[in-house]
Structures are given as structure tokens and as C-alpha cells.
Length: 169
Picture (spheres, rainbow, N blue to C red):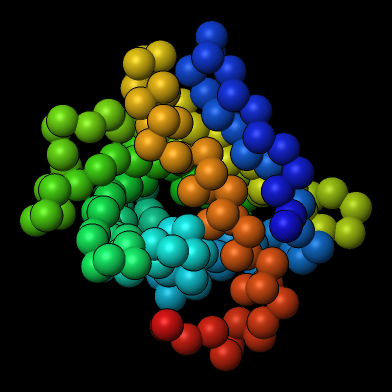
């Protein structure tokens, strides 16, 4: 697995996951920019994602669902706040109800993705900022840290594949 660290800072209300990949920034950016590639890693292995809407431009939206082993579905959405391909993405991330509308009973987060060069490849840093300590504890208690690590653990196989051969599951 390429995840090199997970840091939680309750005082700053953040969780930061850092990973290293031995490919150029453009290739890692495609993991976000291509909805079919995003589907292959965004959900943990037992909750694969299906992307319904995908617009990574500022003001754009992404909507998706993750389907569990029993057929249960968790839905989510992003609102893109900043996008600077292939280096940076900032989006509001939230839960959705069964219709895909934002679920007001669940907290929203802001996720910052930065892709920076390092010798031999790139470092991808994903930092999540929670709206409150209670929200942070709630989401971490639901398995967010483990789920994100498992999801990111699928990236190495995608990067090893020929992007032209990546097809939906």
C-alpha cells in the first residue's frame, strides 16, 4: 500500500492521509478526473462506488453511491470549490439521501487534495477538515479512516494498469 501516513489533529479538526506513487502528477490526477477510474478506488473494496455525475470544474458537482455486500447503498456528493489540474482539488464532501439530495442530518467536510512532485514520482495529500470535534468523532467512529485507507490501497493496481484499458467494473 502506498499510504505513508495518517495524521488526525482534533485541535485543527483535520485528518490528513499521505500517499506516494511512482508516476507523474498527470497520471494521479486522472484517478480523480476520470469517473470510471474514480469508481475503481473511491469506495473501500467491500463498498465499490458508482459515479452518477462528475464535473470537476469550479462549482461543479460529483454524485455517487457505494454499494455494500448486502446491497445496501450509501450516497454522497461533492461540490467543487477549487480545481487546478493536475495539482490541486478542493471540494465540500457530504452524505446524500436515497434521492441523491444532501442529507442535512449528517455533517459535511471540506477535502483538499494536493499532488506534489518528489524524486521518482508524486506525493498525494488528502486533508479533510471537519466542521466540529463532534462531527470528526462521529465520522471517524463510522470507519472513515479505515475506509479511506482501504480505498486508497486500491490505487497502486490502477496505476500499474494501462489507463486505456481501465473500464467500469
